[in-house]
Length: 151
Image 1 (tube, helix red, strand yellow):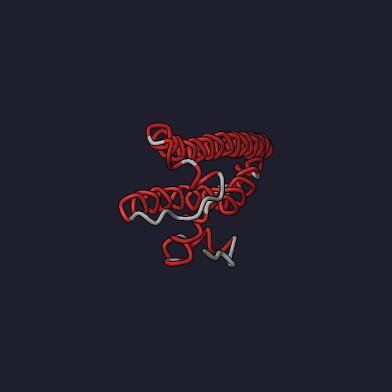
Image 2 (image 1 turned 135 degrees about the horizontal axis):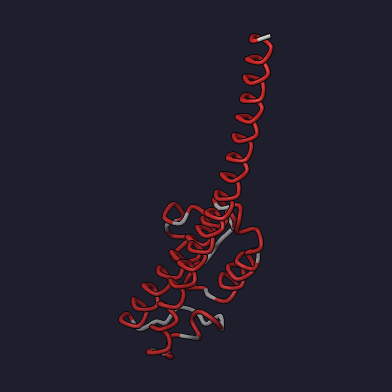
């Protein structure tokens, strides 16, 4: 009789242990999902923050806006050309970072507009196409998504 009672108690303890482990696993999965979402949001914020930094520079130097949003060719004056190329490299860094984050973080699935934004920037900014085509390995995510970038 004592063995039966001990067996029932042991069985009950095992069932309770399994239920507790299941609850812990469910909570861990929930916390992981929340943390992944926060990480994805932070990564998207970083992408946008990088772009805002460049936009701030363009706001302070509006003469460079046509080179990135209107399809204007690279300037011929050397000093201006160098400034546009530096901004183009910064844009390429930001675009590449956004594509990289989108590919690494599954929670950024609703961030598909980034592909459209990158495509639009490449269409309207010969300066960005120029720097990326000169050094495609510097921006691997850009060149992977848009392998036919030409100046």
